[in-house]
Image (cartoon, rainbow, N blue to C red; front, side, top):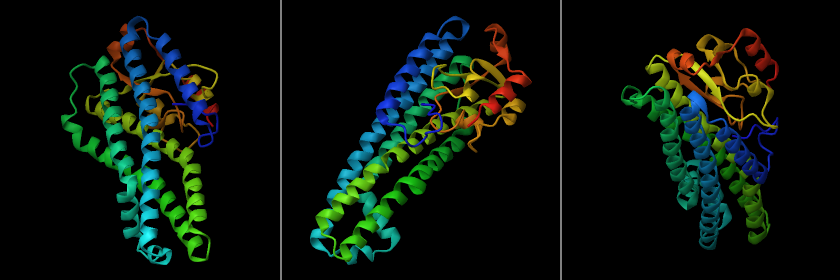
Length: 301
């Protein structure tokens, strides 16, 4: 994910796509030696996140377009005041059935893709691990992640914009002008929504990693990801180092997000790989020192 240097919601999509490809290329070059298999698996994880975001952008655009068509059709049959008087739950149902439900379905499909990639990375270090004992937790994480994106961000944004458009029509603004303004407002909110989508998808994958690792008794984590010109100082200080649980708890990305599931924060392209002590020794990996933890925290933003 793009370490956006303090611009989590304003990075242009074209910039993000370019940065993502550079990150994939950089990480791919690191696939050598004892950690080659793990690194390749992390590349696939990153690619899964990039693909998920691209697909979600299409789904949001498609859902928004369908919802606008449905709203226009409703306005052809009823006056704006009637729609505006609908209870929140009924208006929400209208928005979902009108098109945004398509985006919800697509988000769930992307979660499955992210989960598959995360589990493949873990199997590179601890083959044979099963999710049977933690499947209920994983299912709960999926529901929580979807709620955080749609119930907390996308649907409130959309409902607010729809209500504002209907209110404008009620006071005399021509329907076509109000609908054009609505379309523009929804499009402007796209960047923030995509940031939340990708952040929650990556957190979902990292949460699965953490849950499975805990169930398997793995308490060492290797920090993996690209080292390029847009990498946060927090991440740069930790790349290719191993931390234990105590050190993990001492880390702070400065954004109020849990480091184990958010790395350097919003749009971070780095992630934790749970490893065994035997793997760390065999791969000659370095354990983070107190000074490394302090340096990472000092570079947080």
